[in-house]
Length: 279
Image 1: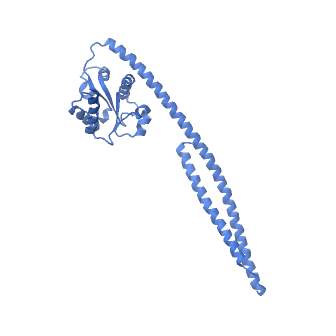
Image 2: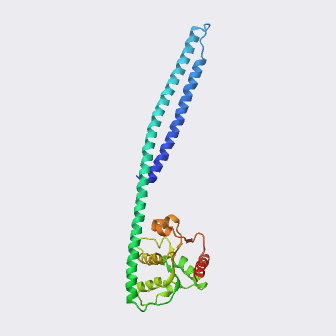
Image 3: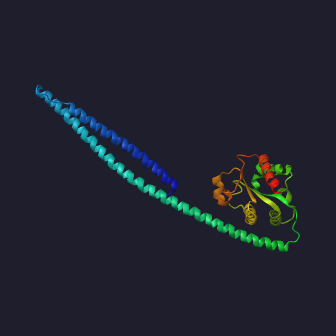
């Protein structure tokens, strides 16, 4: 049973207990009222025989009613005890589920860290091999490498890149830095190696399952991050903290700009400050 289902069950049990407790108090109050009314009935020596019988019938009815109300109260007490037992059991189940979920998240984070370290090692070996084989690598240096999803170009990335370039920042962007007829992988590798920082524009499209190039670019940027901390600069586009954490707990802890709080122009100015401080 899921954590949310256990939480819903606990709320329902507590509501039932509350209703039963109110019913129990009501039954006890009615029983007490019957006792009071019965006590008020006095049989006087001057009362006629019929009058005495009438008072006794009324007294008996009140006493019987009081007895019935007390039986109801006792039944409510049993029902409350049963519900309290269910509450205890369900609360324990909830705690067990939370502990399982916590262990699951810890394992997922550990697996991710192991995968990250493995990818970094692979990238180091691949980059060393490519450096030895490719002596014609461009010496051009870029301020920022833009890692993004193709689906976000028109809605966000194109405008963001224009704003960066208007501030005289050198930006590696695949729309303008990959010549026709060359290897896409090789050009992206060159862009990664020759950029000071990597801006990762995280979006629903970026983190979508099956995205090959975004994952490759992010692996390359993690390689830079392992060598020189602070080289990955995330931008959250139409994502929240929970979305980013579920995709990458490590990235979710990095300082990031979000489209909910900054326009593309404002973001560009913030990135200009980073370059100005490092120059």
